[in-house]
Image (cartoon, rainbow, N blue to C red; front, side, top):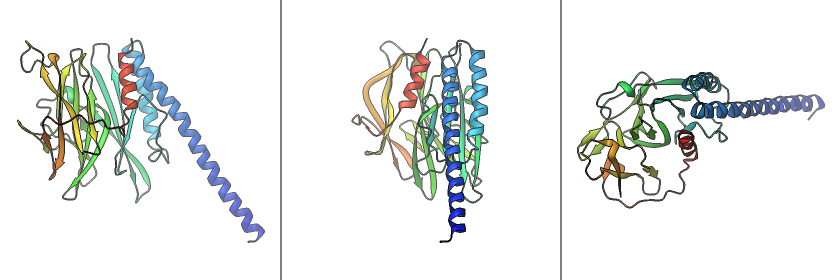
Length: 295
């Protein structure tokens, strides 16, 4: 190897290393900034301060989503945003919630994609339309519309060469009730997202998404167990003396139901054992819930 080639190789390696280091420093900077802004959205003293922090967070997230390397970066130092990668690495989801003084919640989400052919990053800004939805468990949402929630898990299933991504989420709803969401995401041929699909088979019919509503001060559990391949969730029922449909009085009854994916559909299985899935990491969602409970 001659001296000239050795020198050129050194220059190339040095430039490559410096570029990677600079990119890594950029991500460290943005992680700290996103963490601070997301924390302000949860804990600021007024809606106006939260909205200003949210405006800045949107600007930064949209910038980060187009930074080279962001699709493969894990953002492990951010607690107050939900940042999830699809199990098949086809997309990433950036997702957060803004609590408001009247007890309601605004949700924000971006889907990020990496185009392997063009080697370009792309994203879609999702619009929460849940406040204006009737028949929320039956509606199919397109054109960037979605049922706003804060997601903790993405489950990937395939059937007849079609991919389904099941999102497990939480919705603070209002001052009286909370909701748990099981959402179905799939994509059209042009890669545009569709939220909702009639593949959840329950005893009372087929749903496009599953919404469980219950009393505000009640804690419930829902998670996917990879070993059993069940989505496990609490059975809910009204407290003694409350009428059916009065969800502000619905609580867990200490029994569990599950959904299992068979022949292209999620199917209800009742009264299953409670599984302890040690692999599941819900640290970010727990931190966000703690932030929402802070005075």
